[in-house]
Length: 132
Image (cartoon, rainbow, N blue to C red; front, top):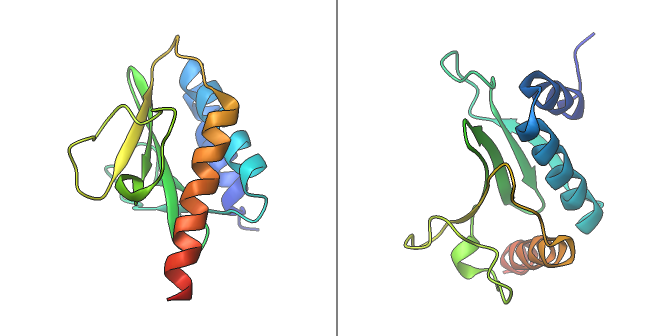
């Protein structure tokens, strides 16, 4: 029997086995709290990718992707440059014309309410574009 995408993401998180897995799991929970209709996917699977793909959250288009590196967890928002970010959560890829990202280091906390609002803003942007 094949695994569901959610089970595959659970496995990716468990395989990390350190703070990155804990951080990615917490961010995933917040994404699902902010948008109960979010779709979890794994994109960009290739043999050279040790994660066997990139966890991706979508709703009428990609909201964000979750990647892990040795010293950070990076959430990249596909249309982040157009997303309202009044609390300044975006701290990476700020010069790009389309994407924005948030890098979380080992000791970085998460402003949970601001993060959920950012997810909702990204969903609203995707929904408004889908209606056009």
